[in-house]
Image 1: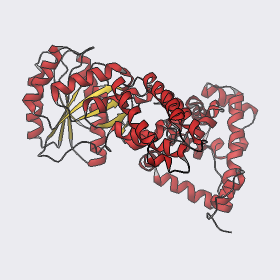
Image 2: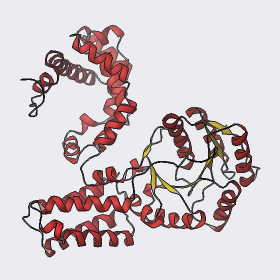
Image 3: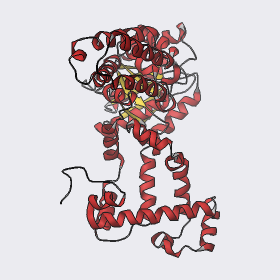
Image 4: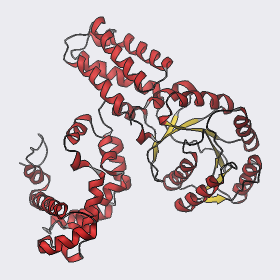
Length: 454
């Protein structure tokens, strides 16, 4: 997400970093580039105008004039204004109410409401230990009911059956009665979508809203919708008095204009960001972190949180103990590390949260950071016997051919992985001997001042 916007804004901001002072002329030139970058990213025109005007006032003000590094201050101003446009830090859903807390999901067809309902249920169950019940009021698309039922089973949430011959309002009311009788903490209602905003659609979702009086009315919008996202957001907010927004398919949009427009148009906070189809691909929306990513600064804080949440700490501890005792790093260990990486969304998802210089370095070695390459490596390791994984030296020519055939790869791929394993074993050996200092030395790096022993 934001790839195009990041590239253009970073280039515009960097043009000012070497200047001794900022003048009205060079600020105006940079702001023209900023304006074009935002418009090309599909940010709504009124939002672009407000943003650029606010940046201009601050860029020509006292805080920049008195600074010794005006270019850096300008980047900070861009960051601050991006955060302001996208809203206050998201706290997630407001569940401080008498259960069941009712959450209504609304939006156009294809925005990802059904998948988002399951993702949201999983998040509430795992992070807040809530008992969550799901129901589909989409009687126009029977497949949506079946899809939600399967997703509910997948995440372990409750599900209220419904059918195409029922009225949506009746389904929602029955689900609420079930939620009360079953003492559920949260009821999530997935409503029908249309290909465009129409009066029939709005009448129906308003009728459901009146019947069940939801505590949260969330607008689910495809981040790739561009200007359509802004128009539909405005219409739904007028009909429902929304309490928040969920942006979906953020991983598929290189522009990111919807994230900068929807909050400003509706005045409602963006609560969550959906990235990918997996049921765990939903995260809180943090404006300050997203602003950092837009300006090429990365989002290391989110990356650390993701590692803490998704990496198996017990397995990581076992590997650390194994290495500290001088036992070699083998293919079983490598396979586990690759699987953990996939669990966090793959190499591209990790790189997306790193500063731009890391992404630029990765772009120069595309094969080394290719998720297809990771899957290929896992397939090669899976085709090895347990003994071969423990002792790679056993793998001779005939074994290489067997492994290549079993994994659907070429012998050259097996050779490449064996060579990489040799390099990794050397690094891990240094790690076991000298800790982090030894590993950095083996990588040709230097310890930063104040780290490690003498």
